Length: 181
Image 1: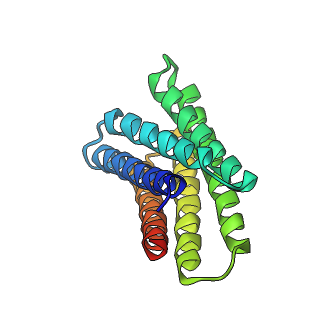
Image 2: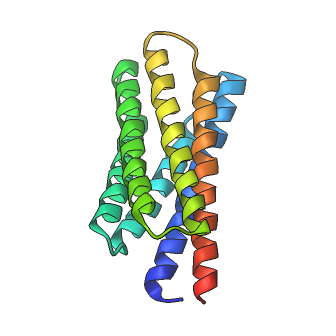
């Protein structure tokens, strides 16, 4: 296993860990009504970092672009947490950040779709698709919150769907790298 492959593998697990942290935060918020964002900040920071590591080592412009767009989405959400913003502006940034992540995931999906058929790529496709769906649900949930509707359980659902997708992708990349070793 070469350095490039180690970085891609490491980046995918960093992303997976970040999605789980954000999903745990969303579940806590949904079940307690607390608006704490500590784990979400950590989660989005990990996701942005992992996507950056993967983009840095990508052989493909398409893959690098998808990961950079996802990292930009995570950074947008980080700003919504750290910025001294009113609720409406913050929620609009969360919507945009999740939609950017979904766009980046769609680009990753399209690249894997065009790749040579394999069982590993089937897992990657499903993982990428779950992440896109999860991010889209989170964007819808934030939109509902803009309309003063409780969407915390909906946001948690989207977060966990995204996390499951990220874990599937990380497992597929792990399997792929182990078979090359």
